Length: 117
Length: 247
Length: 135
Image 1 (tube, rainbow over the protein chains, first blue to last red):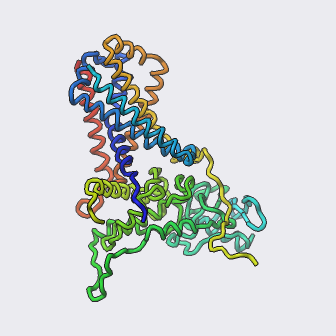
Image 2 (image 1 turned 135 degrees about the vertical axis):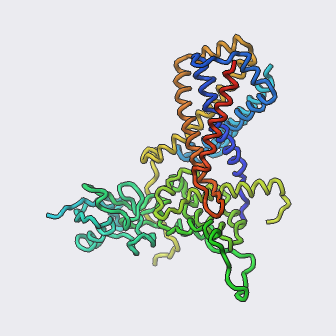
Image 3 (image 1 turned 90 degrees about the horizontal axis):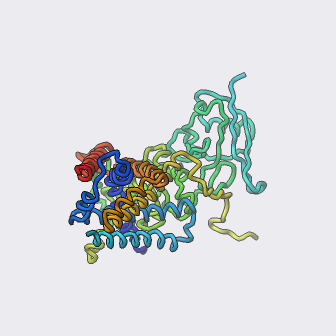
């Protein structure tokens, strides 16, 4: 009898990351990285952003915002490499690069969020 | 002279050819003709050696699937006039080995279909004395769409994952597995999940969605597979939280 | 005498081109959708850099803002925005396919599943904008 794959675990992370990315990233990308530097909107000051970020809810939000979309990328990019470049035979390397990369990014995120003053 | 259209057909004779070639025939462009009629015209009147599969000529048997101008189509349901002034390119169904001319080898699909156990699985058969299984219209509705599959394999021609990975089960096999999973009479969900919650089962699918687009019977195999992924994930969570649970 | 094999290998196989995704528009759309994940990862990286700047103080934060005004960064972020919006739209539109929600025996129309997600998107975006811009 075949043992069922553990793929559902990474698929859940991929789906959660996809939802977070879809709901939160568009407005944040637009405001923080396009509108604010150009003053199209009243740019949030250092204090405003830090104030939002270092609250308990802010830190939790930042962790969700950074970690889940990274795993979304990892899973999707892994399949892009399989199908787009047809390099299935390199799958150990692809998996390490993708999920390993996501884990490294997550660790960096956790470190930075805890170091917020 | 009556209107004509050029039909460019793949020719391949394994005894004679190393690679397929293209041969062009001029066929009458009749407004009620489908591509299958044009192929039969060629076979009857021009070149009797042209080989292709067909049967019911009305879109229920699934035999006549071929690539028409690069799109997977049932040739009995594809009108010539839609391609006027032509030429119309007819090639064998993509992603399958070509046996001769427009005929492809579909054994791979048949093997994968049996693998998913496309039949009602009962833990214990109901004895005849207990009478028929009863099913409400709502229960029928939950799997009816997936039961409309005619195994025409247009979805396999459209699926890039099947083209890239010969081990992938493919849209129709997975949709048919789901047809039985959703049937209220079936008790084989767990058995099928063991076989299909694998990389060459549902997890190879990346939801391109082209299978659903080309399906002539509106089966929506992509939807079936995504729903199956959700089910598999729910079962996985249950097995993580309650590892002692029996099947 | 030839030996009998049950499934003799036969047939002419065409190997799929590396550029299969350019052959048809739906394949290209699919590939763009998948590539959007790279820009999602890019946003996370940018956010981590922003966090690093916050930790280092107002001067570093101001320098980061200056860095964002660099034409390369602008171009990258504009392209990212397109891809991320594309991701959001394709994501919300695909959700109904994955869920066969039935109420009263009939399948719930797709719009009733994707619609609320668009509403949630608008509400969340408005809330985050308010939080960041109220000054």
